[in-house]
Length: 248
Image: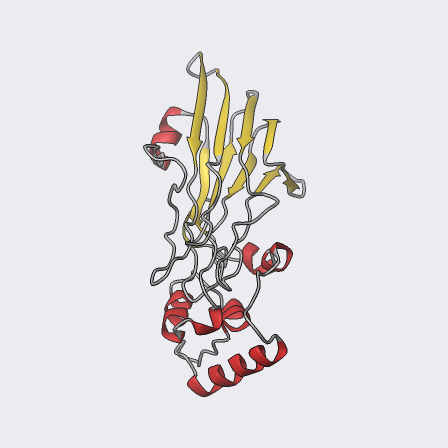
């Protein structure tokens, strides 16, 4: 089995709620991707390293704490490619509308070293964390930090996917096409990582796929090694999110 997300991913915040005249503290752990294994893709948005932890419902959070969850969904292209790909990581964006001082803690791992692939499978995307203050450019955060946020500031938490298992060029093109339809893999990554060409209807182009895979093998003979995390963390990952809950 390839590496799973490799972190527990604590996100916490606390402060004083003036409207309720009481202090508050919140802590949750966020899931991510499990690694691919022989005959099976990894699972999405799961806890691999710690069980018996709640996936806190958004409605429960917003009723009991001064926070709004602007986005919660899977991150396309975050899994390591492989004959059996890893599971996808997730993104969760927290906005703090209160003018009262709130402290936010990020306590996580796998921001530098991505979950690795196995037997020719590729690495997954590592974790990333951002602070978006009103009217300012996003600021990257360390995997372990304590910050104070102001009114309408947003903290974004992106968890790692799981590593891929086996040569991505051996993956069934039909499975790649299905992942593209579901928004889990982009067409760009379908071609670059899996060597799969899709037609206008999103179905595998058998002739084009054979030619592309042969070309990739010719340029990089032998068993594919790990893809670098720098290469994986491209613009595609930051473009669109599937199955996400969005709010204005």
